[in-house]
Length: 151
Image 1: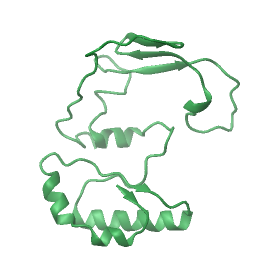
Image 2 (image 1 turned 30 degrees about the horizontal axis):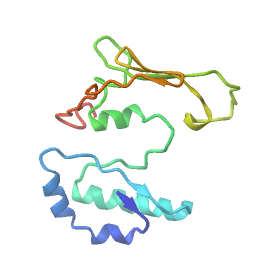
Image 3 (image 1 turned 120 degrees about the vertical axis):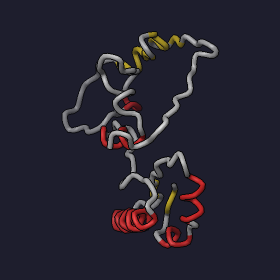
Image 4 (image 1 turned 120 degrees about the horizontal axis):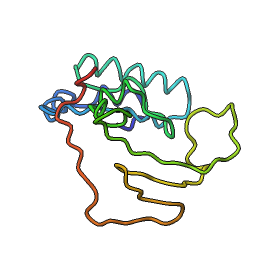
């Protein structure tokens, strides 16, 4: 949900939204449009107050771009431990990048700066350097029966 002002949260028809979400109850994620830190903190604080009062499932903060999603949030989405965790019976997809000079101070994953070497999906190589192996009909639908199951 994109927000640029905390006053919008008071104007939303939360009761109707909660009823429309039932029975699946998807997790709402804030996307703050303001660049000012104080404004962002105010909007996030109000976001949590309103959605806690309305008992609507949500993330407490934004998901940062180009950083891995935390295990806590993966559990909330209902994806962990079935997907995204390396274990017997789990399904994991991964990308391997060419080794570049690594700067120790960098935090997160910077996909834009690295060159993709191999992309693997369920043990099958999808991309190797610049060659993409396109397989029509290869996609799949991920059905999550119950979110927040492991939270």
